[in-house]
Image (cartoon, rainbow, N blue to C red; front, side):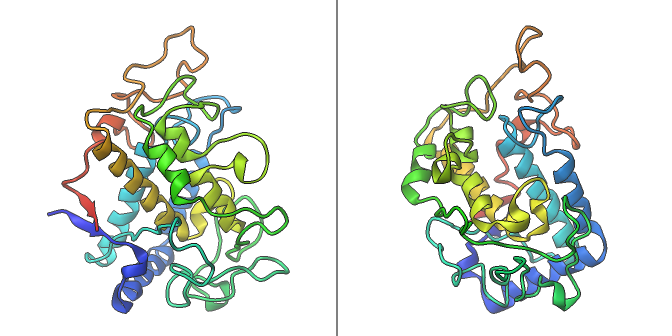
Length: 288
């Protein structure tokens, strides 16, 4: 039977406590850091060589859908009633709103070093030490709004522009694609400030700290953010009936994207599950 992912702002006190408890337990077991390491390993950009499975590529959405499912499997081994809630950043837009409460994810980092001082994931509580990262700090960091170059969270209107694009993705299938739902949602843009970062990317930028770059999984909000991104894919599928993941076939040897992206029926590392298999997961979970 399918389980439900809820809006984080609707969670009861008990549901918040159970989610936090399961997260802290898989961290204690060492499982959580495996997820951080995996995301770092698969954070491959346009300018890098080899296959791009997780970012700047069509498989951004199915790869993270599978990633979320694997995290939920780990959480549900601890507590079978837990699922990942989603954070609607078009509505809950302030540092005092969900999910930044003391009983859930805690708040912003302090000004001096961006260290998170509140909530269950604060370093001072002794249960959330950063072990896999791209810097040497062992405490969780955040820098809401990127004050040195301020930007705002994406709006409902900006998100709607992505949802209104009826084509999943387009050539050249990377961060420079100017059309297609995938990059409009993933959010690689041009210029500076808010214009350089669309939807998904701008949220990472707005949270700041550990949410910047490949080690972003160190911040538990990563999962709530990606659950909302995944919900948008589900809504897009419902709006554009019959629209499918693209490309259907892999680019040939003459293409700059040859062996650099995943086509619909090709396996995504490290699981070897295909984007096609990730397009319909209604039997596994649904959104409230």
